[in-house]
Length: 202
Image (cartoon, rainbow, N blue to C red; front, side):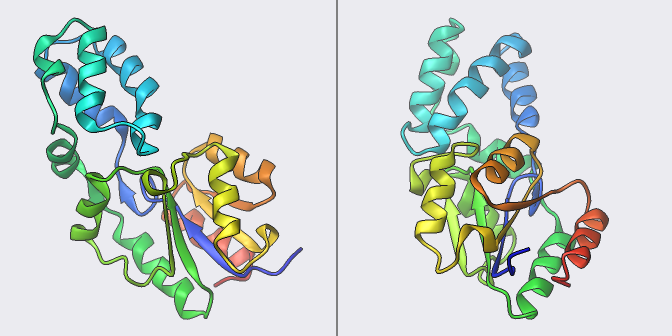
């Protein structure tokens, strides 16, 4: 097993408590839309928004047009207020990331996120102890695309075999594994701590 030189953490579902279903529930109720249809359209376009290739106003315009909701079509700032309403920090994982950092290992963030949501996370908790911040909207690619992992290894002084990536989604864990990056699927704080101990990181 190659040595571990850096540990990367996902944001949503790991560092912060957030589920896209919360936004889908809120918007579909507010605009009296079918939750299923709205959810399908939102998830279909979310990766384009998170890659920085679409503005939030364009997102709602496209979805509103598809669902024949002129009111939704005119929106341009729903995501920030709804995200702020529901998001919370997983303080135990933030503390754990500091413990990893204190071992001398560099740590980083690798996250699908948006220009409006990431600053809100930074307001809620300090991320200054992270050495690297790989954010999809700045990179132009989103997980699980291998292009985002390629960007990472081109911008860290480590081989991909020396990285550990922690993510809650099985699809992202699989794609990182397929790319050659070691992974931990985040299921709970306790399980993550045990996994890091087994890997002799803690």
